[in-house]
Image 1 (tube, rainbow, N blue to C red):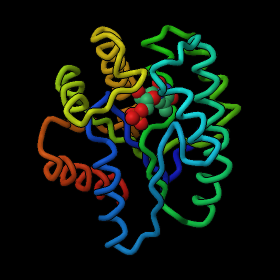
Image 2 (image 1 turned 120 degrees about the vertical axis):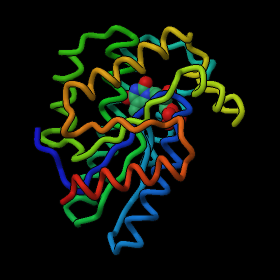
Image 3 (image 1 turned 90 degrees about the vertical axis):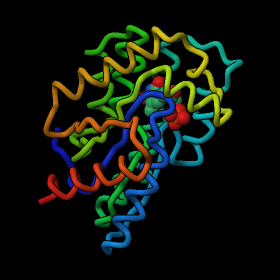
Image 4 (image 1 turned 45 degrees about the vertical axis):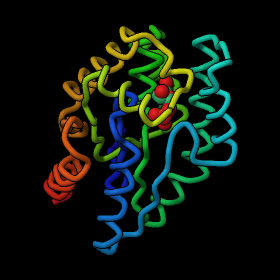
Length: 207
Ligand code: TMP
């Protein structure tokens, strides 16, 4: 799988501040003259947004395999409709979550087979990985507290602390396995401080 330079993902537990940081980095890169799109998973397309609603509505009791396949259905559409064309057009793509979320949530936390997820990923996203992934790392209880304050309550926010703790450990494990691509950022700091750190890491890595 090759890392694609204009492709950046953000990952992290609930409430880690990804969407704010996606916006701040998009704004920064635009001031530097780059053409940038910001996008999100699940979602990013009309079909993906419908799948997102199915996945996140708290009343949908879902089998883990259905859940996995819906994330990949959203991703298949997203990659073909938005991400590949943008990259071919020299547009920088910044996505709020990508494959690492599936590995962490459906693989490690739900316990689905990691080799099955990897095989599915190779079919849905052939030969493409983000060049850089910012892992916004935060204490689980703090993340859930932030989301409660923002009145955000989807199907995943209702999961147990143990579930979210295993998601956090999974992300840290992925970062350990791929230190060149996945950069751990301390998300407990202010949004401005986190953004400055991200920009620093990006400038160093893009050199
Ligand atoms: P968020 O965009 O508000 O973070 O919500 C997306 C939720 O979906 C979040 O709880 C993480 C979860 N998720 C997965 O479980 N697997 C995936 O592959 C992705 C992209 C997200």
